[in-house]
Length: 226
Image (cartoon, rainbow, N blue to C red; front, side, top):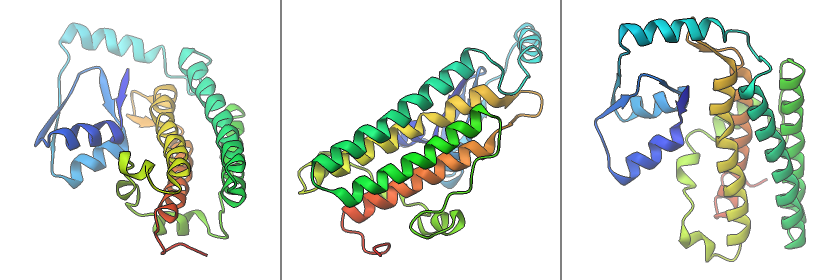
């Protein structure tokens, strides 16, 4: 099963706006992607299976209902999480080498939040509540509302004095976006049409929001400077 994310739809819509989006029969859409379509009043059409395919799909889904099953989905999710954790360390080291010790420390601190998330998934626990810059998760979400669409990084930003730092943060943000589909693949309950670990997705999105705020400050945004 494939999941369509908000970023994929955003890229498609940027290239050519559309009024209807057809979702293939073996494809699901993430909550963020569904909201993106709703905000732009795009009609979502779900392609239908034939009866034979429905029967096969039903039999397959019944054998794959155990949340967090030790399968290729789980292994792919955990492997991806390991890569992201390493990426936090690599980018923090590069920022420190570039002379931005403060930003490097912030990325390291955010990396620890992601490590705690990774542990929560493996031990099947609820992720720890994140506090950053003295703000609660609720405050961060409110301050970063819709901010991601305003930090669309292009070639122009690379030419800025801190272009390298912005590009590194953007790469980390884009890499984190790949986590949501793998969580959905691993913990999707076909019968109830819900994700059993939505709490993991919420935490990943919170970390992405914090990265967007870091990028916004780097681009000259003053709203969140302490």
